[in-house]
Image 1 (cartoon, rainbow, N blue to C red):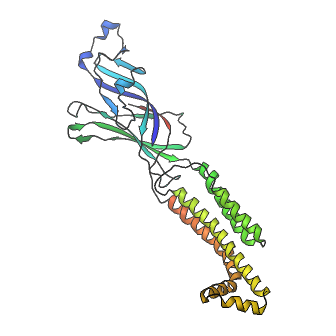
Image 2 (tube, rainbow, N blue to C red):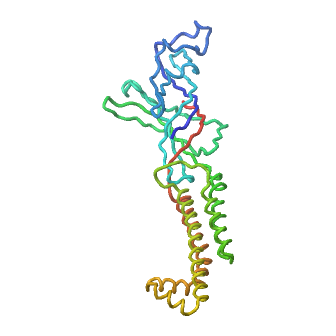
Image 3 (cartoon, rainbow, N blue to C red):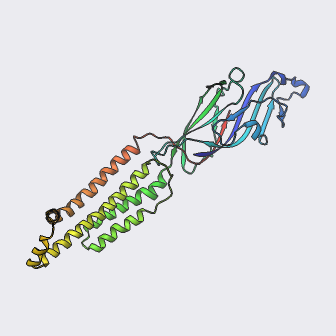
Length: 328
């Protein structure tokens, strides 16, 4: 998945060739440069950026360069980057996404260039940060220096830990499906057969029209919820069909004359007779069991589902978002 980050990226290093006597420049604390073409700068790039991510080549317009008397150089650039973040929607929408901002040197190995975080407050998050679908819980700077066939290269990373806002999914998916399952349960208390079918079919049609969800090749937590709720509603329809069939069979059996009944029954095999006899005998029990077991089983599913996906299963994922940071 791709997310967008806006940050003020600051780098500081010492270049003794740029040192000067401040008294010759009216005791100025530093010199501001607007062109870095004649200045050496680190070849910093963002390794998980989509489309390059070189600071020097792509972001020359929004930058600030200060040169201090002792040769210290402050290079600050305002950057907007599309970054890649591997997604895991297994626990969607209760996931806690973790995405990284990774930057490193492209050509200089650790013998020539090493990145270090600023000692105090290296990462500053904008106080006005407000993401529509996430809450930034914490951020952790770390060293990601790696070795390749061409040498060892310095690398730094910021891990951003988010918490997905799931209120919208409760309002648009979870609560409506709970209400639909309850409506299906109420149909067991209705005597009119046509009304029962209306309850069951209507809930099935309504449950099929939901909001757009991330498309994955594996099962998400929300898929388990919607699938199980639809299974409960479909089971309601099946039970009503069975009960209606048994009821009509019983009515036909009692209304036919004895001779006609005997003639028709002789044509039926023994297995069909046993099934009809068992259904006729347990017709009232089937309705009573449905009224008791239906809410009990759904309540058990409710407890197990939220106990597992909401509090037990860890996950890591991310969605499209805009983030504002200051990195030194």
